[in-house]
Image (cartoon, rainbow, N blue to C red; front, side, top):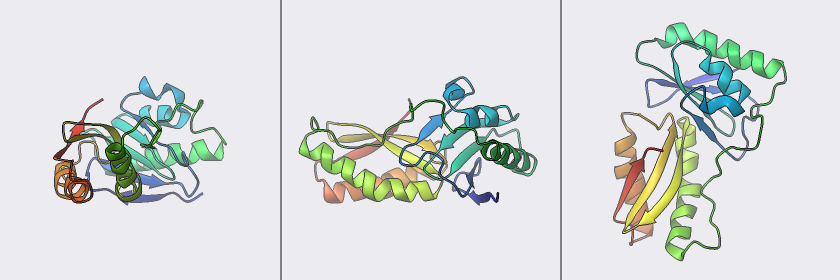
Length: 185
């Protein structure tokens, strides 16, 4: 098994691509070993001293380290953990509790449906390439609220991406949008 590694715009996060599906069409974000209890691979990664967060994407795993550790020491251990997991044939998730995407539902008004469609088709694929994800959390009083995961969470350039990229694009297509804010959940 060959696992590719890519840097992300967030220097604390590396993207690991095992060459196999990780979560398919859903994602899961874990900020502690306790949160990761439903994911054997995330739990194993948190056993590595210095790992701060694990994000499971469609075909990649983003791992965030704390500032006290260096990737030159952690990278090999992360690669070994991921490889051992896949070689052993263990499941990525022990249940189907992964986060759903921002799919529209019939209760959404037209503005929210349009915002969700733009996020799903234009934003999420782009941020996934950088090892992250953005989840829609709401639209109220002209403000779109988004939750950032993986490499996007805590990334130095995430504010620029939110304001100059996502906010400008949403304002262009949906005039009712006044601003975009990141939320912490």
